[in-house]
Length: 493
Image (cartoon, rainbow, N blue to C red):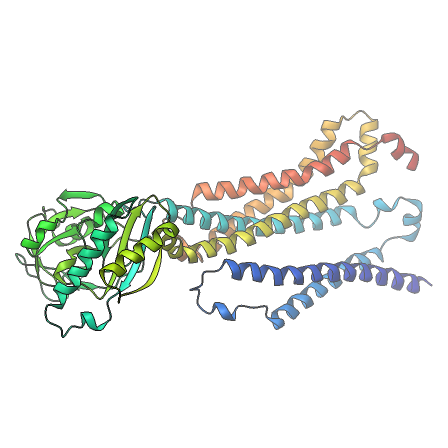
């Protein structure tokens, strides 16, 4: 008879645990399919092997097996512990006084502390990634992509074959006509052309040789060369630091060029580069120094040299049009002007330059979104964990709270008692999580932009958010403890 009763008790405990595991696992599987679809919809199109991302059935089965094992483990342990309870004591006393309450409380505190520690680690990593992404978006770029529409134009047709005489003059004439027409579109403030679309990386790289100070091969600073029109700086609002901008009259003075401030420091450290000559794609004279605009990559500056487009017109051009009108309104006018200059050229792409800025940070945005989702999940689990443990602890101590109130303890004292009980695992979990966070952040250091892994603002925000969430989870159990009716408790006694 005793063994049959114990067997039925263990069977009941296991059935309850398996039921919870099955329902939670089924919801988890549903959320996994939904979550993967949402993440894929938010992922950048250029993410490597994106088409291979899907739910892995072996991983799903492993997770389901882990959930069942956890349910069995946490269902068997309480059942086994109940076997050591003295039946006479269990009959004579209320059920909330048995099963070694101190050991159970320590176990529950350990579980909550572990959950809090894991949440702290994830929240710190999430805060660092969010801070890094914010720095990337709000940093000084020294160019303005707002209200700029970019149109890519290809000159790969027989009219511009290299074998044709004066092909550079023919290409220059087309560019001149297109720029003139684009600048006359109603609502257009300025129009420019460049040989490389902004924020698409480094393409045309060459060594810069000072004619007055030759250096051995391989020691020259490498520069990114762009062919641009005189209106390029004005269209992108790139600041001019020293000297002057390119001008249409420079056609009569071949070889004039602009350089970036970083190029000036690399090639002429401690000197004024204006008026100096250098050899890169021919001999050029520096007429102006411009700011280090991040036109290649938002995360770093590069040594830049800007040459007039008429010196060596490219076969792939990128027209930039600044206007308060949206790209969707300007698109037809831009195409019409370009095809009026030459109806045979192709226009593969036409889009707002701001969209290119968004595309350039798409991977960073996705990484931040992915880690943020994990951080939010950890925060919710911590909220439920703290609330569940405290609610259960309060239910076990109702008699104690009732007697305390009957002896004169106020409701504030009862709430303070519950809050102190919750503070121990929360504070312990935060301290352990801080240590784990310092270790975990080393693995994501390469993903951070101008953000230290020990950033105090990000760490403080993570801890404050977790403490605020834990405090919210404490309120309802604490209120229940303070609302215990001592007369009802004494009648049960």
